Length: 171
Image (cartoon, rainbow, N blue to C red; front, side):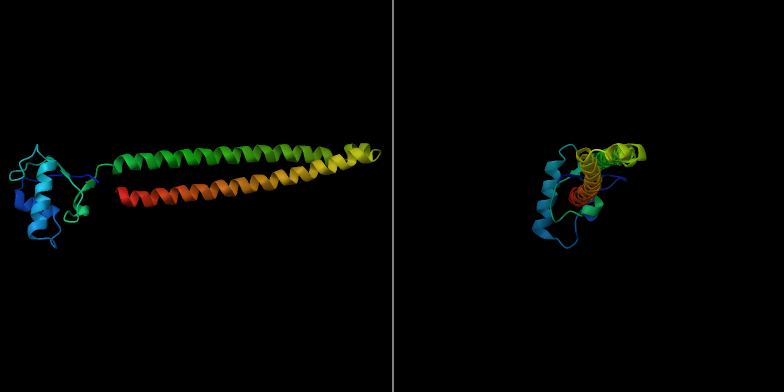
């Protein structure tokens, strides 16, 4: 993954190498890394770098990751924020919908359990059974809403976790 390095002070190739290269690599590996760095930066004279110069740093074990910045990190961070915001909005919408359905169920249940309606049901066993079935269905809907909220919450956690893991790779 392409990374960048912004020169903050005037430096030569030796200083640049000390900043960017892992000291465990010497000789051919270091020379190959320097050649790759030159190819990635035809706009820059690596022997005379001025402050503000932006260098593209190719992938490779020779380069210090902590000395450079990921080109895609800022884009990924924005993406991650957008996903988090969208999930927060979806969570709020889900909760609002569940609350509205709960209020509707409470109103229906109150009517079905009300004394006036129960007096009417006393004279008709079929309608009483239907009303009891409706009360049972309301309870089932409530359980379904709870499961939906739990599933969505688990999915949200999973997305956040996956984005965090992806962020480790991108950054």
